[in-house]
Amino acid sequence: MKQRLLSLDVFRGMTVAMMTLVNNPGDWGHIYAPFEHAAWNGCTPTDLVFPFFLFIVGVSIPYAFKGKVADQKTVLKIIERSAKLFALGLLLSLFPDFDFANLRIPGVLQRIALVFLASSLIFLTTKARTQQLIFAALLIGYWFVMTFIPVPDFGAANLTPEHNLGAYLDRLLLGTAHLYQAVKVWDPEGILSTLPAIANGLAGVWVGVWLQREDKPVAERIVTIYLYASLALAVAWGWDAAGFPINKGLWTSSYALWTIGLAMFFLAGFYWLIDVKGYKSWTKPLVVYGVNAITVFFLTGLIVRILEMINISMPDGSTQNSISWLYQSFIVPFFSEPKNASLAGAITFVLIWLGILWAMYEKKIIVKV
Image (spheres, rainbow, N blue to C red):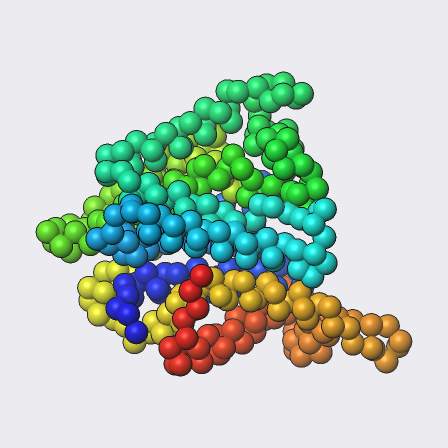
């Protein structure tokens, strides 16, 4: 198996395991607050999952393209991988009805594809100074656009879910039928908010490059990351207090910096503990999640929908989909508190996938897109 940065696999595995946990509660009506997204402004542990993953995508880029240049073969490979990720996202949106008229075009895999595409090309075609300028331009430019440019048909710039400029552009360019189905008037992975999400990827690129600086002592590399993480958190807090709130739905610049700072703290800590100090005995469960991250995200979404299509006849003549039946039969009876049952259902789902991914890891099966 190709040598990998173990701490990055552990961090990726932690992130994907958390994503699996929060995406699959036993009962969506009974969830503890940390496992839900913030209603609008603010940030819960669940709101860290997606930006952490984009940061991890960025960290991986300097390792994946080390020594490469932006020649035709490399660029085509980047475009091909991005297209595959985007297509997988569209497939998840289509399944099982394949209703193209109401196909949600944005999505999690789609945003990962765009961030990977942009971050990879920027890394290969620009110097560090230019990358820093692009990073700043994305965050400052997005803040300016969202807070100063009037919204057509609505008036002054605002940060409400339906009437902000990003929501307006999503409706204008994609149409309401192709946005987040729960609301259809805006999309949390919309077009404009993808720009600051690219900053999460670029921050990861910088960390990936910095960790490979063998001319710098390990202690200096780690301390430098911690210093930049602290700076990102401080600026995020200040920006939030100044009126551009930390908000995942809008992917505000303060939210991007807040999640970048926390991601830096986590990865630097894992790097010191695992790759520098060599404490590796506890890492395998997270590693097996980390090396097949896209696979588990895609298949969990697909299999849950398949199970929801399988109906089971109940003694009273009613029907229940199989995943609900499994939860009601084997989880709920053991808990008096519905939220505990819901959490137990999510943990069970995570453990089942841990077993599947462990078997894949032992057989050296790593599915690459």
